Length: 115
Image 1: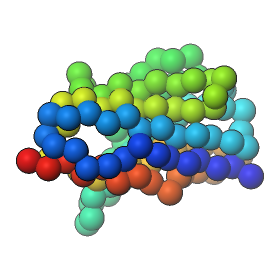
Image 2: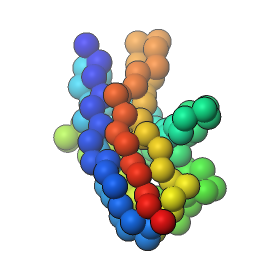
Image 3: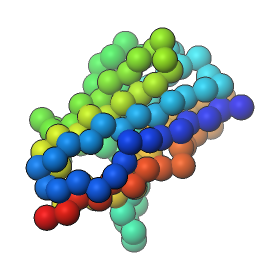
């Protein structure tokens, strides 16, 4: 059974930092692209960052220079370090992968940034 479990969200002031974690099981983690998405009420889920199995990364323009995605293949965990947070970063953050022909999502973790 594929499981993705996010953690690390919370409430921070603008300019603060958080580090999200996503623990993955049920797949060969080291071979998989991993992605972080975020979603606010009434809006589509937005891809924020992605990391390939080799560690190459890509980011949406709005978080470039502030967010860093990384992975620990030994721990089957993907991380999203978020610095200089802004109120517009407030959202539920989800990790994601594709395996066995399907997309898999975690339950999400709430990030709230106060101004």
